Length: 142
Image (tube, rainbow, N blue to C red):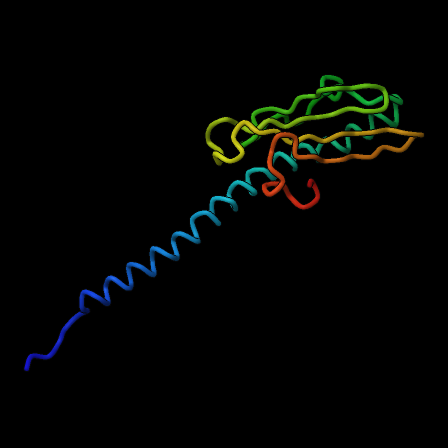
């Protein structure tokens, strides 16, 4: 009788099936991870506006439009632009728009917003998803 060398066909099929199951679980998890990492850039860029907006509010008594802040980083690797939407003396909304290409398809073209509200000399900031699904946002922005 000949000694068996290598793997049998059934053993190889089982290994391929196990790899397929692992890939079916890992690939969607990785795609969600990359989308969340890319979305965090938008939140980071919006958070960087807090200090200059606060300083402007303390000196001028009104919330600024972005043009009056001077230099700020208005885009990034995954963020196409940061714009100011509605702005009044006591409330202003700043919105980050994700790029339409080069980012995860789940967040391409989606927005994240930061709303500043001033009352009685104090200023508060609220981060919201805009058009982006909450599961891609950092915990402080849901």
